[in-house]
Image 1: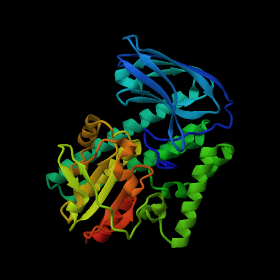
Image 2: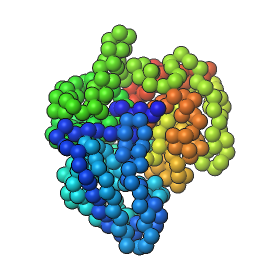
Image 3: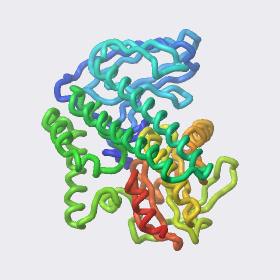
Length: 389
């Protein structure tokens, strides 16, 4: 079962029921220039699975399509095209119209759904901020490669950290203001896989729970965070270290990481065991995963800082399309080893490690033993400083 809980990616599996929205019929009328011919699906993103609600076929260049059905309560849905691109929607009963260009889905216009308009704006904000931070991190990496003194790099790095914190606050502010429970939970998911962020902002989480008390997904989220908080108190650890999330995977800290072999971008097979003798970060991600892409600048920073200290990274992608995977690696400046069998959630390595959401990572010692999991942001840097002395 692929539970995404807080760890929801862009192609996330998530549904949310709105307290204020009543069930009823919906109709989605779309018109997208340059849309590819072939099947188009409307899918509900639920806690357990992706449910196909309706399908249609684009048979000509008109780019017009229609979906009809009944929605029990407000939820998160996506319109998915044959090549994998999609449009996320917060769907209510009523009529919705979508217009735009398939080659520029960030600029589509939506009528008849305030929640979907709000969701699209949030996604555009996330994309813009992610691109800015990635470009700033690239600039820092270029200066570091030119052996720029740390005294000159540090102010730039601090500005990037400041921008990351400002964006985090933007997400929290959005969560407090939105009238859509689906959008509130989706926004919280964009904070990434580190539950310490929510634990530190319990007021925001409590506010969502209070505003949407009948929302089953909000309840599952708050229940999970409560479990993490209880586990943290019992172990005396902090969430940033990742120990509290161990139950979300099949392998734990102290286990020897299961070996696997997957092809890299050139088709050459790479085994996990080939990295023995080095500290290794095994990073599960995907090009379509927004939280993964938001976290990538932090991983790049860690790589630049520690790559010459007996440290390696193995990126394991859950992509389906090689082109998208390869482009994300290039765009985000991920200059370490990468593998994928391009089988999405059907990859054997998902079951082998019990991966239930991404981003997820495991830090291995030179003997292949897992010494930490789900290290994010400053938590990743702090752990690497600790072990790579």
